[in-house]
Length: 128
Image 1 (cartoon, rainbow, N blue to C red):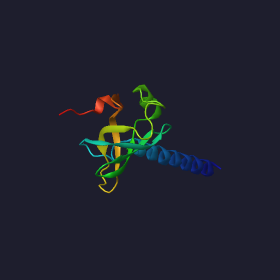
Image 2 (cartoon, rainbow, N blue to C red; image 1 turned 90 degrees about the vertical axis):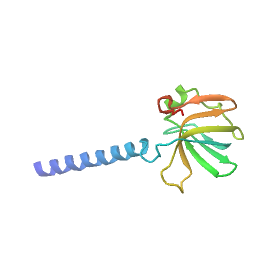
Image 3 (cartoon, rainbow, N blue to C red; image 1 turned 120 degrees about the vertical axis):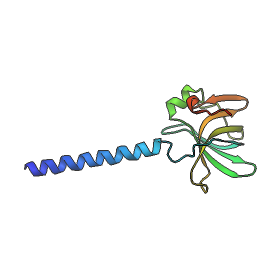
């Protein structure tokens, strides 16, 4: 009986650790380059919801990009809420692109829509 309980405990603990490490990997910055780039384009899709609000942005020279913002609460605290942008709006996004050059994906630290700037991750904004 004790061995069975121990095996269940060990299995449950391992499962919790696997789930937690997957969530940490998703929410980290390890997938993104250290250097920041600026993208300019037109918003083609907007998602405001968990785990991260996102924008799909079509650029003039580099096609479609997937822009991730912070978690929903942090994005809202930055002032970017439902209605802050609409499909067809021009956007400038500053952030860290994926380390995979084939992947057109960015974690934005700042976005500007219709002249209004939203500092999503103010502590991560790098100035020259």
